[in-house]
Image (cartoon, rainbow, N blue to C red; front, side, top):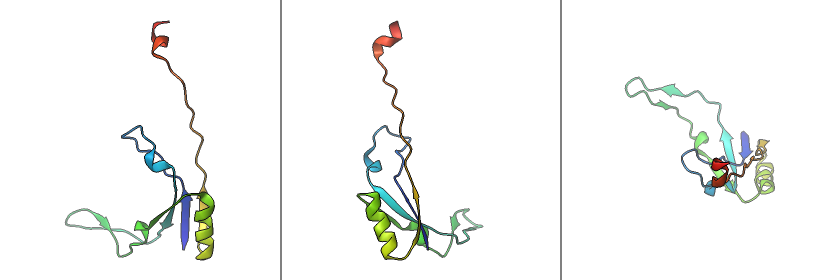
Length: 92
C-alpha cells in the first residue's frame, strides 16, 4: 500500500491556518471509481481513499508508515512568502 505524507494547505475560504499545523498521512488508492448513471456521483467499492491520519510531526508519520511496512512519499510544504503591507502605503 502506498501512502502520502504531507502538511495540508490552508483553505481558500478563510485566512486562518488552523488545520495546517499537523502532518497528515493519506492512503493513495488506485482502484477505479465508477460514475453512477442515475445520480452522477462517483463511487467505488474501496474505502481506502477515506483513510486520513493526523500526526504532530513528520517523523511520527514516517515511523508509523515504516512500522506498518507501507511505501510512503513525503511531500514537503513550500515556504510561504509574506509581503508586509501598510495602509499608509496607499497614500504615498
